Amino acid sequence: MVNVAMDSLTAKILARASGRDRVEVGETVVATVDKVMIHDVTGPITLDLIDNLNARIPKPESLYIFLDHYSPSPSIPASGIHRRFRIFARTNGVINFFDVGEGVCHQVMVEGIVKPGEVVVGADSHTTTYGALAAFSTGIGSSEAAYAILTGRLWFKVPEPLYVRLDGALPSYASGKDIILSVLGILGQEGANYKALEFAGPGLRTLSMSDRLTVANMSVECGAKNAIFPLDEVTLDYVREFNTPIDLSSLSYLRTAKVESPHLTLDLSTLEPMVAKPHSPANVAPVPSVEGVSIDAAFIGSCTNGRYEDLLAAARILKGRRVSKDVRLIVTPASKRVLMRALQDGLIKMLLDAGAVVTPPSCGACFGGHLGVVGDDEVIISSSNRNFVGRMGSPKAKIYLASPVTVAASALEGCVTDPRRYLG
Image 1 (cartoon, one colour):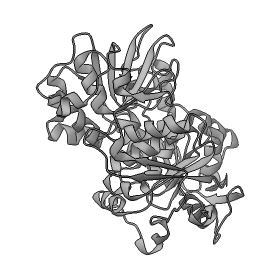
Image 2 (spheres, helix red, strand yellow; image 1 turned 45 degrees about the horizontal axis):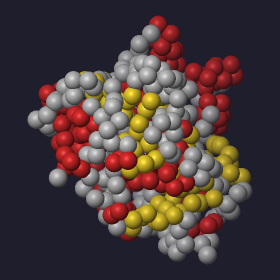
Image 3 (cartoon, one colour; image 1 turned 90 degrees about the vertical axis):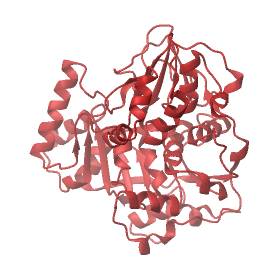
């Protein structure tokens, strides 16, 4: 039987951050926090608490502030919130301030900021994304964020690991989105409540960092406290891309753990294109079982699937074709870096030529704030992470979640479509 306390990468990181040799699953530890992230939706409460205490931020360099949800501002109240953040950053010496147009917090944070082995918290549930880089990262409340900013520490109950073994290799039509939707379909919305989803197995070799980020991002949808991938060559190659300085001699403990008794095993070679039907990310089915459902809109973007690789995959399907006249396709790059690369490589022209609307880097339509809000009785297929009632606009709308290639194929046909017919 697996010794969960010894084999868990999550437990090992929390032990080091707590100044301990080891910690036990279920115990509460006080750990040093390396980085704290807040944004323009949850962050105002954090600022209120700090201002009310009239407190000084001891390490402003560890705080990361993003204006990404309402970006650019769609209203006077949002503009007021943005102004407050700008003033707060200036007066408190916060150098890591990302104004409108820089991109979604979770994407920018993995572009050379988060390092393997770090403890990173954010006032947003999808902070679990950074676990793809072999870090412990988790979402926290706005008040907890204020505490972490002011003290540099936070308490955590060491989560029980839930080991997921990945075998085989991903088919050409599948991606990280199909992996995590398959996992959610098995575990359900509460199947990993306050557990650490820890990924292992030979199938990891076939997963790009983009795939891993998608999987880690959506792990919270089954209740996971965090998700984590081991430190391997895929991680190191990605970190080197940003010239991020790391001390490999101190990170050997993050290498793949030998997990003899996984809780869940997934054969990647057998995966089909998957879709989450309304109104839960865990209401999962193979795309062919819902093929033909008419759609009004399609969205490619968000912290889940707005990366360069996602735009590239969609562009390959859309190149030389036109989006259905009955569908509006909205594409929102997840960061300025993603947008610039897509421009240089001609992807944006391909998308525009196909009839897509390309917006500035931001959260965009994902959370129903602006840049693509859906109306009453509309149906949208989206590469984002949640399809709750009212998530992308009207509570009367229906949201289907799928990979970028499935979204692109569906936009062409005007209905939910299996992407394999466009991928050979």
